[in-house]
Image: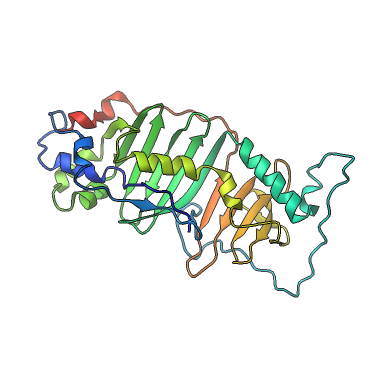
Length: 294
């Protein structure tokens, strides 16, 4: 089960700063001071992982399983006298295919990721983010079955925006419906070192590594027949435990997807590789610094 230590529900502790608020432009204690009161931890699973496409579901897109009696094409390696071509990729033996996929993943600079993260206080949080892996800037959302957060990180600044339900849920009765409606119109700006958001920031950046899709498969895994997934033709590679990695059947041989096995299968999905990513802070009139929240 993959675990990313220290992921907190972003903004959960912010409710301590708003319970006495009469307006958004007054003074209040910093959210960093509130961190000492509670530090909910989160965990990303290490052997049942995540994401969905586009919303978390335990039943969608479960990979097809090829019966043991099905005859599969023999995998071959290209001649050492010439480089691998896109046409060669579907015919590669598993060791060569995984090596090619790991190299492709290492070279990815920007990516769109959809991943389900399991938290201590939230059974599932769907991360849907576009990430610049070099700058570690991103924009995206974190969604549970109860609320949604919009998140942006640029440099050392982080902006979060919760919907009304978010403020009502995390406020635990201390945030009125009227105040929740007002807060839902604002982005809260804080630092990526703020303990109430730092774990989630780190989790999104870690989730944006396509190489994770290969972590449960090995050279001894089984290659299954080609499939289609969204706009990709993919090569499924299935581990002994049933987890299945899906690799682009061309070049670059990107890891596209990981589906875990079990009662409640989940998936990580990756696309938009190396497409330009522009992260823009929210409009100034919609931003409130957490230290000034009051």
